Image 1 (cartoon, rainbow, N blue to C red):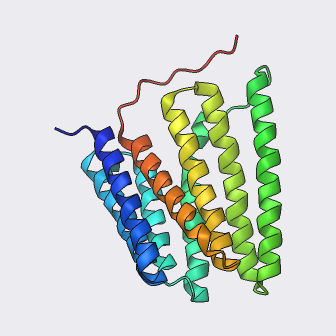
Image 2 (tube, rainbow, N blue to C red):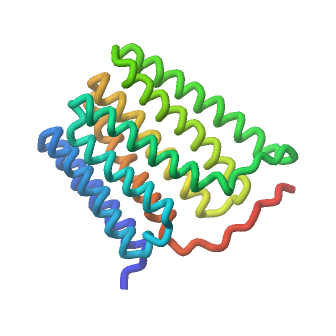
Image 3 (cartoon, rainbow, N blue to C red):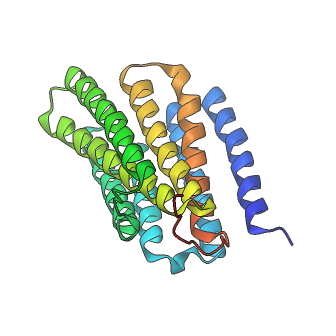
Length: 232
């Protein structure tokens, strides 16, 4: 019987090939449709492997699926804005999931330095996105929704890096890469769509698949019990 880890990896590889083929050969709508199918395929695997027991992560998944549905009609302002709202709600639930693991330990140099670096990096990314959105849109609501989403990513960066520094476990590492993958996917999607840089569609989709893969792995793989990392 194929293990959970192997099943997730095989599905990820298959979906990368299918997505890249569709992006190359078919229309933008077809590409968005296969993105939807990809997320749903991983959600089926998530269900099969008992992911529904993780209520918060299930809710994150459902909100990401709803976001992908809206992205199919991204050219319409209503669905564009709704996609931002749903993605923000998904990030909020992930923040809710990570908050119990958060603690700034002033005696830990790694914790303090790591948090400051992420605040600096995330702050710069937030300002960059806000500037790009302001240049591109005249719609105040659109700018506000993008700013909220970027700010939530900043908070999520701080939480997930702090989680990894405190526990230093394989599960926390997977969570870090999951968050950074979906963030990078959304950032590249913004550039590819609004700045009309078609070459970015491939890395955008690659990081989306990687993010969904890692979310599934984070939820269902049998990681060892986490223990607080003590800095020497």
